[in-house]
Image (cartoon, rainbow, N blue to C red; front, side):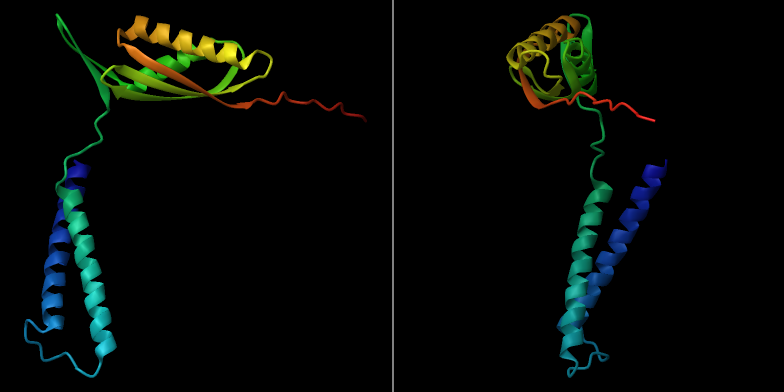
Length: 179
């Protein structure tokens, strides 16, 4: 309800400012006669026109925002089965990737990005490793674990799993306290 009211108020504001801006621009440019403009004050005249043009452009932007469709719908991957449609959100896919990749030992601070293409889904994983295991082996394990887990769990074909090792985690150093 609040969103509808906000959009309505934004629409009314945009429309009124646009009308006022057009009238002011027409008055200041001389298209509409106006007796209150002093020809000797040219700088005020130009700056007022610039301000009115900016207000008009802002009004067009606000007007567009007020009438555009809401794009806050959750992106999903749609599948059709013999029983009907299945929609799995991209956020669900990301969480499944995090769950699968976190099972690999030696991996920390995972971040996942999912992209949908014609061949299936492409997964980009950013990770920090602990440095105790071979990075190529860890990367391969992450790729295999995520690929197999996603295909088994969702049934969505996984076209590519990219792994980016961002850093090696530093082990915490403990200093002994001397009293």
